[in-house]
Length: 159
Length: 84
Image (cartoon, chains in turn red, brown):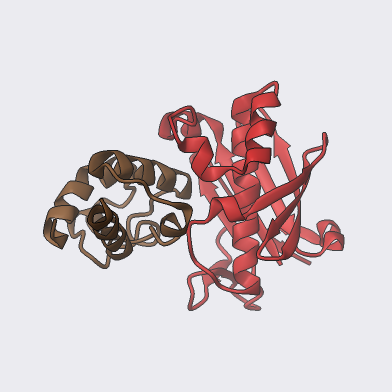
């Protein structure tokens, strides 16, 4: 299972004020909020943690569909200095990798750690949606993950 | 507060985050924030915080979980207002 999320930092700056009262409390656990406070670049940390949670949420929907807005339940339990993460949601673990540059933050998570080697970047036109609205490959119906924000759109699957 | 009054009060809260104007123009109880209005999930928290402020209520995490459409949002607001 795979999930991804992309953040266009210029658009995030325009659309969200992460410093508003209550914002961090509703989205992040105490441990995650400490990571943000300690980070040299707090903005990037906010959006990295958010993109990890979004990716894990999307991957989880393929294991057991459970639509909802429950960011606190998606817990980032490990994050190293290569921006590799371990996330837990409803007892399932996901393994993430985030890349950050000056414009974008991109995360992909997989349910099986070995699947990190099998990530495939796909053409954005060759997908459709299943009955639950989740993206699948047009030809094979295999689950894929799509994320679009501002200037970027990314479609990923597994070989 | 009845459903119609709550919807009227929710419109200006939701509007700044809407990416699908046509769906906003026909907003009703069945409208879904993400699939209909194409609101970015990162902005759901802004809607929750704005609702708390506008109705002077506190939305706990269990309630927030269901705030993906108008119907659930209205029900949560009514419950929280009744508890006041």
